[in-house]
Length: 146
Image 1 (tube, helix red, strand yellow):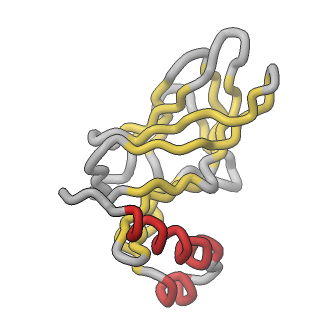
Image 2 (cartoon, rainbow, N blue to C red):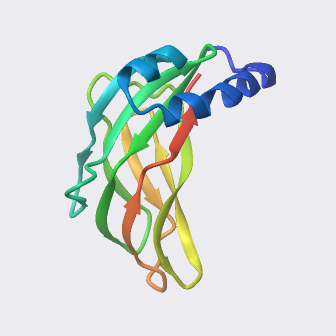
């Protein structure tokens, strides 16, 4: 797999906001290609989806660069690095990819790291016994895949 160049990443970064903000499938299709449509993330352990925002994942292609995007939120109880869920079947992640996501604010911390590995496992990192993560919001997660 080829690594993206700075130029392709910059081109995609400039084009990405228009696709991310698109509110209709028709608008999204005009600004980029949806490679893998929104599908539910299977939550693991005690994680419970927000009723109005179940966690979902998709892959989009903008200017020849693929991005993993996540949305939704979950109630959790993490005091350490913990698996949140499994990406939908058919959504392949070719390398470890990560991003920052909002979480409950505690002891001055308001974001946590979320990683997706090649097995499709989503892991939330950053919880401690002194700063327990009680919810995580995936909206805004967008990470380069290729």
